[in-house]
Length: 269
Image 1: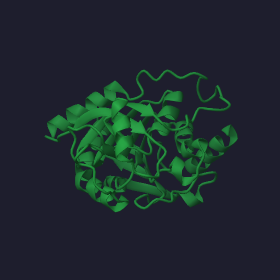
Image 2: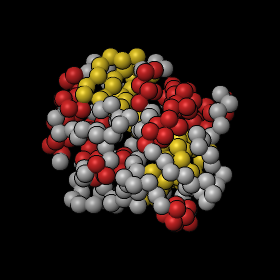
Image 3: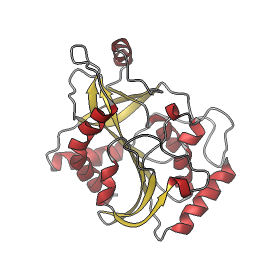
Image 4: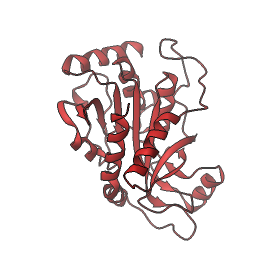
């Protein structure tokens, strides 16, 4: 694995003119954030050696390099999921590559189902912690060059980055929530009983991504900021049939607010 990581990192670096230290993973419906980047280069996933390919609608499948609010960044327009049939090593491979490219901070976004009864569709939730209901991506051989065998997860989501995000949201009058995100395999949306179970575990929202990338980032001592958009509700009396198209539509309405928050936090680093 180490050889593939280094090979891919070298390939990408040979194609770009900047040295970003911030990587942004854009989840379902959030790819439009890339429109605010002053682009220097774009690379399709299909052109990158050893890279998986995104198969989900709303995930364009390319790396974008440029500046956001004057700061050099890398944006991953489309991510990979365990339910697509990828191994956990493949799902988290890009994060490994980013670290070897000199990336220092990881920003992550996604859409999720709200299980907190105080949440509504369209709410922005800053993730403060997670519950992992997916296979752990660190199972298997450990490479000390990447990180330690046993990883402390007492601060999976960086408190300093979270503080910057809350400050930015308040400055712009953007309503937000904070809470715990539960990561499941998907691709099915949860049943009413599963929503109840996930809420009973202490989660505020549930989705099918993010947790593996965060675990791997923390394995490599990379600070993480993550945000989710509540696209449907798993709350008794509010559960309705949901489609992926409706998820994308819910996220699209709040994307400008997310862009504002991301830009302010990144500029403040």
